[in-house]
Amino acid sequence: METSCRYLLLVLLCAGASAVEVQRPRGVPLSNRQFYEEGKPFTCLDGSRTIPFDRINDDYCDCQDGSDEPGTAACPNGSFHCTNAGFRSGFIPSSRINDGICDCCDTTDEYNSGAACQNTCRELGRKERESLRKMAEIAKEGFLLKRQLIQEAKQGLEEKKAKLADIQGSKKDLEMKVDALRTVKETAEQPEKEAKERQLAAWEEQKAVIRMEKDKAKMAEIFLELDDDADGFVSVAELLSHSELDTDSDGSFTEAEAQGLLGGVDKVDTLAFESVWSNIKEKYVSESNADIPAPVETPQEETKEAASDNDSEQYPDDDIPEEEDEDDEEDDDDDDDVDEGDYKVPPTKQTQEKKDEDDEGTMPPYDQETRNLIDAAQKARDEFDAAERALREVDDQTRNLEKEISFDFGPDAEFSYLYNQCYELTTSEYVYRFCPFNRVSQKPKYGGSETNLGAWGKWAGPEDNIYSVMKYEHGTGCWQGPNRSTTVKLTCGKETVVTSTSEPSRCEYLMEFISPAVCQEPPSLDPLDNEHDEL
Image (cartoon, rainbow, N blue to C red; front, side):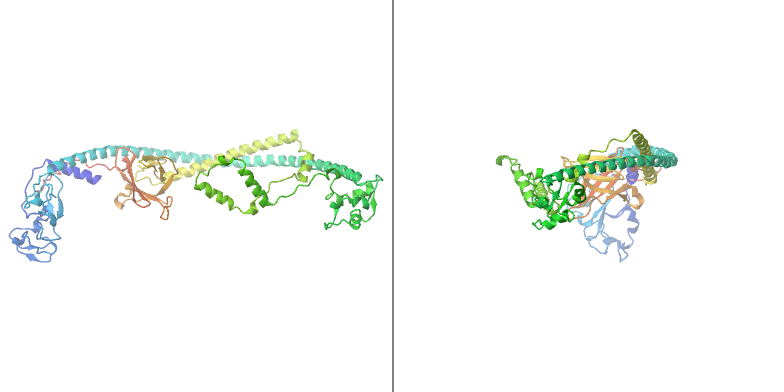
């Protein structure tokens, strides 16, 4: 931009200057005139040989570098200088001289071809000067905005430093508060814990009494069931009617086994039954439950097949839902791959332990004294948690501020206004989102997931203008390709906007971004820097 501005000033000055023709061979730039002195031998510019001056532009190539034929097409490696008075001078290959095509806007390349060329240099110069004038105006306004951004950045930096100092000061107070509240919490939790443990122990004792009473009642009930002749004794013969008590589970419940359950005697009374009750109660099936069939455990495979059959019966043949897409089929396949060992058969009956717990009831509410201790401990926990959250927030704020303060936002922090901002560009297919110093992403315009085109990497401009290019790296990987990356080229402008995106190489994106932070100070117009047009 600075080079363009300087050139604009030069063009504007030259436009009003008088034209002076400097004699030299055709096709020779003014800068090389001293090498072509009429009447003196000419030495090839590469120093390879010296020839008489009259062999300049004689349509025969004498010099290896083509410097003796600047105005003819004799040398394949020669070049012709277009003066283009009123516009920009330049060079064209000598092979284009007199080829019937107007390459120089001043028509000097077609001096002997008969081509009907028109001199368009003045008009081209006028259009270019107008374009450069507009660019210079934009650069000037952009630079004024940049100065404002720099001022705001300086003020913002001071505010952030002051805020960081305040936060760091408050952090010490918060740390002391957290330590104090931790002590309060631990002090309050100790009596709470002891009170809860006392009430739980009392409840366990109460449940033990309930279980004992139930066990005695059950024992008395079973004794009466086994005492078939109601003689006040349970005998071996009476016990043999309950084959489920077979001790070795061999299918044959013998008198010896029954006698072993009764403690080695032939019969026991109520008092003696208490000592052998533990041998009987685990396997005994009450006669009142004898007619109720025991639950049969269904093999896992049969259970799963039954579940599948039931699923298909939920819909009539015509109403079975169709699978929506291949993803659903893949999900179904994944389900089929689940190890059968992981399949859990739904419980078919309530365990005895659970039933006993339900019969025992639930633990009564805590007494008022315990509730008061719980409330006090909970209050201490809430206050400690709130203080700890506040301390974590302070740590987060400290890290974010330190990062922002130390970040490279340009020589004068002129790019800091872009931090925590995002800019979008919508094309016919995608919505591109550019968040400076964070990431670049792409999302389909009509729905779909977002693709990461790269995270902030570094400033990547040339050494003399490093802040003109941003590099974003390590984005989402391409299919069988590298990770996506984005190069962001910054140009001067009054606005802050993304102007274009492209993918010049696979998985490598290019984004054009306008920002006043890029604008350079335009050079001053010095009326003494006046030059003449070349002719």
